[in-house]
Length: 428
Ligand code: PLP
Image 1 (spheres, rainbow, N blue to C red):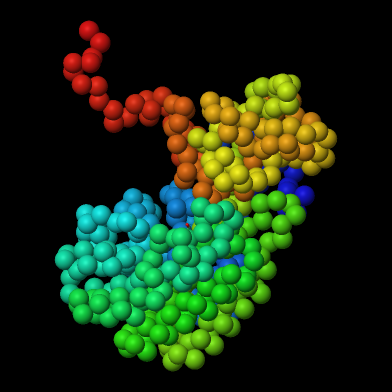
Image 2 (cartoon, rainbow, N blue to C red; image 1 turned 45 degrees about the vertical axis):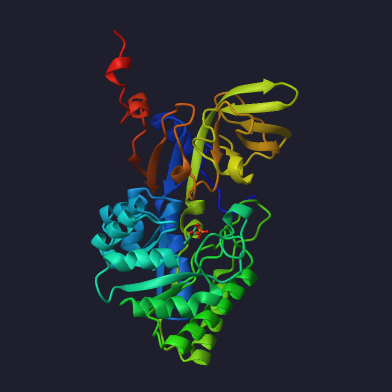
């Protein structure tokens, strides 16, 4: 069982001091419930662990995990920067009040107009390829400060789709061409000031991360020796995992920070790299365990197997269907009940892969119960769609029992928004 499940005197699940059953009754289901203090605690724990070891430390929250404006505001208040991967994320971060200098744009297969947008927005640009560098040089002002994303040939992650370093990866410039592309950037009139790598996502084992840090530092050292570039920042990307199953152990963040910063500092002195900013881009670690998805059971079906059918689907929450991810499920009315029978929890989308759990031991579940799907804060709403013409759900933010609707539930009219029927097809 996850350690910090809280219940109230009715025995109902509490999220940020609010009764999950009452939230479902009042705001409807499916409903994402975001726990503000959990986000703040996650950010502070991580920041404290790293800055305690190396004071020049900066977080760039990977907002692809959760772009809700309220979440972004919380992180802006906490002092985070933003890792943005698209003009839309840059726009959202600016609207959330982030200073452009605190936004690092790491795009992949970027169009020229997107580069122009990044320049006009004044954000930092992290270059992913020679092609991008050359096209950027056509429009960039002289002396633009840039960094490069490097593929350090080390990859790790919870699923093959999440491994973003290594020979099969589409991301970054090759490790062996790094000195050459920095030189090329200087010749083109840029001022390269940073280096970046992101090896994957959902990493609970420090070892691959350590290897990536070591490799990136060696690459940075070689670039510095070959070109004289003085790094103002070295960014190791995101990837810090969270436990999804009750058996998984959380990362010991203090130990993790101490190992990584130790290695980082050794490599800084080995290569004479001075005291650049050390940056990380966590997404999942900050927001992953801070949200629940509430969904109501409408159908109990005894077919060839037993199904609890709910009113959310993979359009609402994609991770289980896309990655086969395990997400722990509680019955919000009785979250401490012991499992008593095996069943599948199935969504309402017309696809047989639309399952939140297969052969899961769960407590007794009745029609009308509210299920609380845990760890639904990262890559959850941000990956939702309107597939099957289902409007997206609402999101509420809770703090000490106070509830704010931070995203309205979509309506049918949102399904038609922006569509035009040519005059010749209009019904006469
Ligand atoms: N940085 C970059 C460049 C990414 O692509 C990602 C995720 O895909 C992240 C950071 C965040 O990863 P995570 O949520 O695992 O920390």
